Length: 82
Image (cartoon, rainbow, N blue to C red; front, top):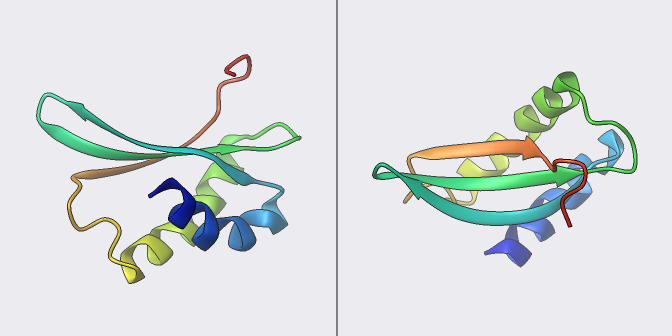
């Protein structure tokens, strides 16, 4: 799944100087979430995440990658994570 998401998204968000760092599922209290973690060589602020989300959501929907999840969480990588 991670390679497919990266393939679909990285070219579309590169103008924002972002790339997909990680894609993973989580399940908390029965809520299945697909997490898309973004990274950059620059600071990622809320506005950049909002812009990326507007690009990513329709791509994920058009490719039926959100059919079996409850939440799509698009967030930045925490600095210091390896």
